[in-house]
Image (cartoon, rainbow, N blue to C red; front, top):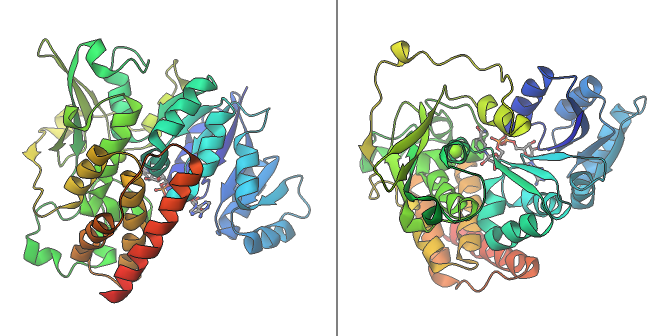
Length: 389
Ligand code: NAD
Ligand code: MG
């Protein structure tokens, strides 16, 4: 019986994780479920799963949840302390890191420090704390399994999971596939007036709002390039982004002998989630089998960095190193939130990020304090930039 904490249980990743666990109820026990403010949904999940702990990041929401669960055995906790506690409980074997954004950093890092199997969906945590996070995994004998479909595919295509560095394993390149999002074929002119609803309407994947907008701007792919650098000990120049509109090939690894290995499947997060839950064994995911005849064809295109400047901003921040990626991530979160609230235009998102990056300089990301300090600074500055537009 493997015991699991699900951070971000009410989100798309959290719900998909519970769907997979439902197929293996004899092998997994849910110890803790967490959410930010969605009281009704977390209450419903608690009544269904009877976890020992439920955590609401928001303290007011926690009080209300406690009232709703007063007749149940679930103990309600709140805030970052509550999240950190359930991510590092002795009895817990694995932690699904499914919180969106920088809010996931501290609890995800706590799971690594407590030596858990970390199922990493929360890419922003790794983008912010790359070196620190990878060191915490190694030093505490934790296991790190990528949930992001591309990184899960790469993990499956690499010869072994050790962090030896891709060159040592005869790998020449990593090819990260990108669907291109809802605006792949839009001209710069058409991009000027797109709405949040259009941006959130992803052609292949059903995801939370923030990652959907990131997929539309291509910042998601930028964050994924950074994520891949840390996960696979690669340099950003070893990673190439290839547009693949069908989202059937989830990414590829190229070897020095000219071989390309790919992982294919229907675009459904339950596959990488099941892979990480069961690893090294394979377990059922509930995902429909891929029919190559129905797919019929796979297309590939080059990335257009002009229409989607966010990807280049991410490459540049990774190259600059240190807290530059913290600043990139913070500015992006502020800009995306402003866009979702219709306070910023879609094409202004990269402008806010670029201006923030050019006004703040990154430094060595040696400690959590430095990372959080630069995160706060970048959020404040990018908010000012949004307000001034
Ligand atoms: P979502 O918006 O559907 O869910 C986010 C979850 O995080 C919710 O449970 C919410 O309550 C919680 N949360 C939000 N703010 C919080 C805060 N301040 N403190 C604590 N908890 C908070 O998002 P999602 O689509 O499930 O994505 C989650 C993460 O997984 C993101 O980092 C995303 O990039 C990554 N990811 C998602 C997908 C996908 O298919 N959805 C694919 C790859 C990677
Ligand atoms: Mg992805």
